[in-house]
Picture 1 (cartoon, one colour):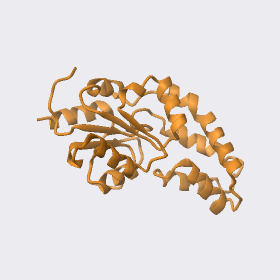
Picture 2: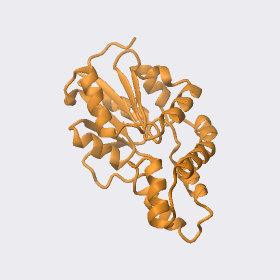
Picture 3: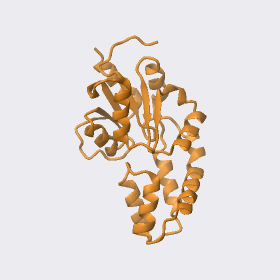
Picture 4: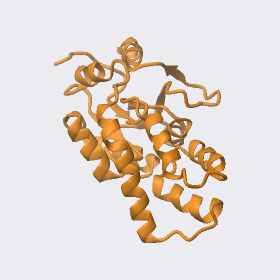
Length: 218
């Protein structure tokens, strides 16, 4: 077990683009999902790329009702979700880790409580985590059924720790906004998504973030 005292007593991690290099996989899958609409695909992808905090089901609904001008039914929701999962599941299981991700998890596991907060649906997320043997690292896993701000608040409540003792690591501006909304310290991981000059530290990988957190240790 690692023995040190950190100013942060809870670490919360995003998944896609933070622990695994899966961002491009999901973007490509989204494009393939709507490839039958070539005249609207640019608008669809623009919407998708600029709404990182929106769960996929809400994206599907918006695209069908506001871009394609078509009816969005419960059956269509199920079909699109199943097709999307089919497109991404195997690739996410096999894609590479962000550099230092496993070392980061091994280093902090059993020393500081680790939590996972993701926008993926629960069943899909847990299948991926189980297949990659990551589930056991996390004290609790939050999926798309939770808004990220509410997940962050719930973690602080569970641990009975003030927000200043919590750090959230994510790869999108929306992750930063969620942390900022509840006054939790945020560290960015550079997955090539913009942070729009947010006043944060951004690192290329988890090795650099680990060194940063170690430097902040007391």
